[in-house]
Image 1 (cartoon, one colour):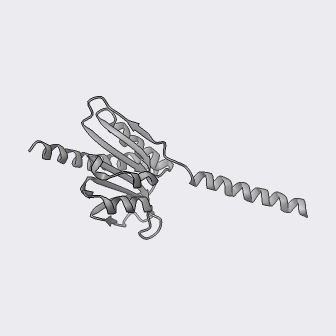
Image 2 (image 1 turned 180 degrees about the horizontal axis):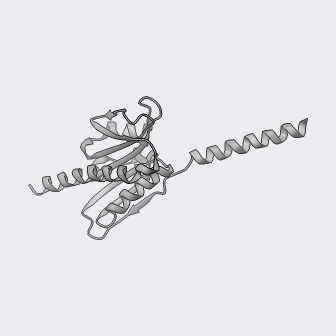
Image 3 (image 1 turned 180 degrees about the vertical axis):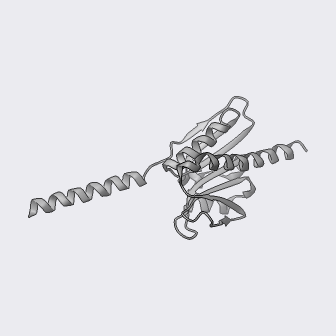
Length: 170
């Protein structure tokens, strides 16, 4: 009986390690510098297949004319919103109002939260979320919605960047 128990224990341990590895996915951090950049953009995110695809579309949209820094969401605590023209935060809502503490600290310290676009993946897509004056865009993690979500985020970021250009020209 001991051999059977040992095999089951090994199978359970292996399953736990595979699950842990899947949860421990990290965002590849990038500091892209564009020649004659017009804007600086920070993208802070956690990782999933859906979030990676959305983040990739947003990055590709801005990389030709913006300096874009991509960081794991846990690195937000080392950044300030005022150092960027716009900030995109991509996070997961873990139950009612539970989210990454780094994101919370970043938004609590943001002098200018109107530079921030917040995207939360959620189970209940009818749920509205606002924190520190930042209204979140919410969506479920369905790959068929990835292009639409990325377009919505780009539109919000474009609005922020256009406002920055308008205020600089006054």
